[in-house]
Length: 251
Image: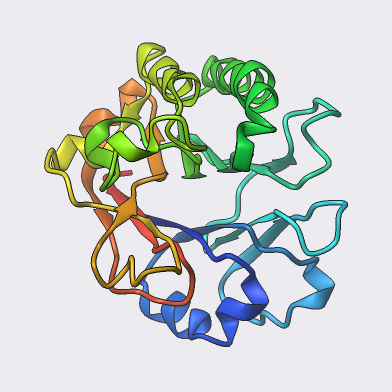
């Protein structure tokens, strides 16, 4: 099974930059998108063989998630059933026979860290509790833009970004908690080296120079670790300021 995740930074804009071709050529069983910035009725996305699951923000042109799946889940859930978190379209869960798949677009702490307390003291805590709750039923795969570079090798310039959104101690601790609770950062199971990024600023030719951040992840329950075949980043795929990432599993 091949699953791909991609923050498309506006699905309508990404469709004009080759998203459909990527979907068709990806050979993925499931694709998870974040930051769709659209409602389903605003997007012409006719794809044979894929079930579509949308969760759009109440605010127009903001946030939003989408899953395309060749495999029909037995059920799907939007949000985590907590009102203060669920109006921005940030979470979709699909229920498959062997696992839950959670597509997440984690809130950004914002410039000036204006949303840091919400992100770290409320969202991160409630999201981890949600993952642990559903993991009691069956294993969990969660993926998406988690808006944090976990360690210094996960961004090109750690020293100059110490208190910037995405690399604060509080956000990094939030990711530590996932690992402490038994979830596995799949990419680091296969690749320990720096220089592997999933997001680049549009400024200063950052992508061309590979001055980036790894803020997009696939994490799996410990019990699925042995089923991992590979985890990968696709920096050559353009269309967004993020690139797609993915995993292959023996399921």
